[in-house]
Amino acid sequence: MYVVIATLRIKPERREDFLAALLDDARVSIEIEPGVYRFDVTADEADPNRLHLYEVYEDQAAHQRHKETPHFLRWRDTVADWYAEPLRVSRGHSIFPSLAAWRRQGNA
Image 1 (tube, rainbow, N blue to C red):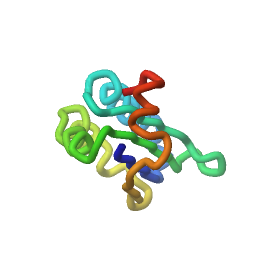
Image 2 (image 1 turned 180 degrees about the vertical axis):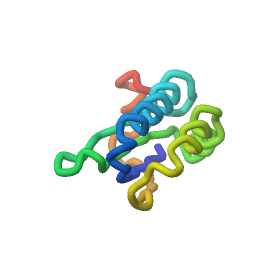
Image 3 (image 1 turned 90 degrees about the horizontal axis):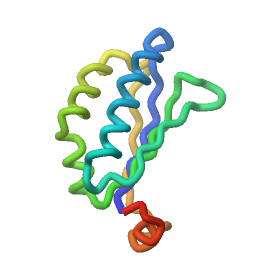
C-alpha cells in the first residue's frame, strides 16, 4: 500500500471554493479510480485553513494514475493560486494495515 500524507494551508477567502474543488476530486477518486482505497480530508483543529489529506493507494502506480486523471488535473489547475503557503507532502508505504487486511475489511 502506498500512502500520501499532505498538509496544506489555504487562503481564508478561498476556503469554501477550495473545499468544493477538493471534495469533488476526493469523491471521484474513491468512486471510480481502481487502486484508491482512502482519500481522507481533515481540517486542523487550531487552524481550519490548514488541511490534512490522507490518501491510500494500492501501489505507487495507482497514485501516478490518479495524478493523470481529468478530475485531479482540474482540481490542481483550479486551486493553484489558493494556497497560503507551500504544500507539504510525505510519501511512504503502509505497515499496518496490510493489503490483506484491507481486503478482509472489504476496502480493496
